[in-house]
Image (cartoon, rainbow over all chains, first blue to last red; front, top):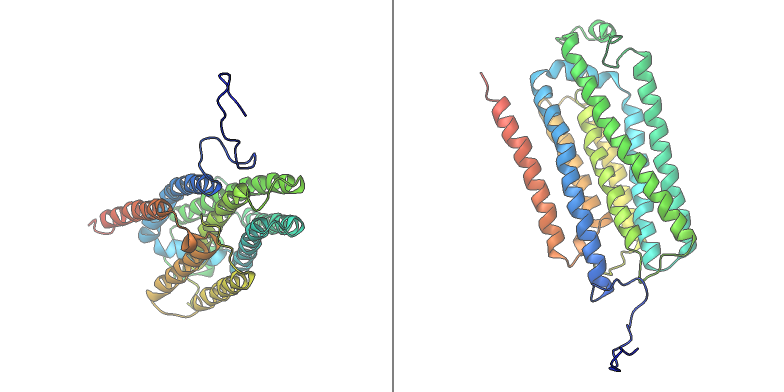
Length: 235
Length: 93
């Protein structure tokens, strides 16, 4: 390549994936992952506000939180935790497949991740449906009469128990919204991987999308004990 | 992030550990440990989160120190939020 005054400048020694402002692909990748981690640290504070509200009200109204926790299905929660852990494994392996340039393996793992994500949302939907049927959704038709009857050992104020269910729906709802966004990101990654966009020299979107997915998994890792396991010991 | 490629065997053993810890935390919840129920549940959750961050999210293998600074800062401010809030509400008369 030469400029208008005839001086020779070096040809770029890299593929089209390296942006002009970066010296190496490693530097470019590090900048992208650092950006994702910055975003994830803001997400920690975003969820943190809800965890803080949860902490205060659980401290104040422990018996109501215990009864609310007993009313949700621990097995569905545990299975969903397993489903998300499986999806995190397929995400980790898909990053590995992209690093090694195995397009077919990458596609299979991305599709498996999508299926695990959809399975999680399906089970979550069944759980929410159960709560609607039981009148445990905060609002005008809310009733905790069944819990007051079933757990006479606990001191239950029906107004306070709505707080548990408000936090339950807000926290699992915000988490599910993140899952829906994650599924959108992974649909995009699957499409690009199908087109052959990812190579051992350029797999940053898979890595960065994977970081987001793992973060959403970690949020659930804390939501499971905090919402489902408050008080399961024999009364 | 370093180019380090982690073996699938290590990924699968991390996955197996996470599954076992999930079963353990669900099982322990049915035992009466008094205030330790909550502590055990949170310790197990933190172990699981650490495994995900270090191995699945490659933080153990990264050469980028800024990533670790950002994570530490995020955790610090989260604990500041939770700790100071609880210090207020838990000591009100």
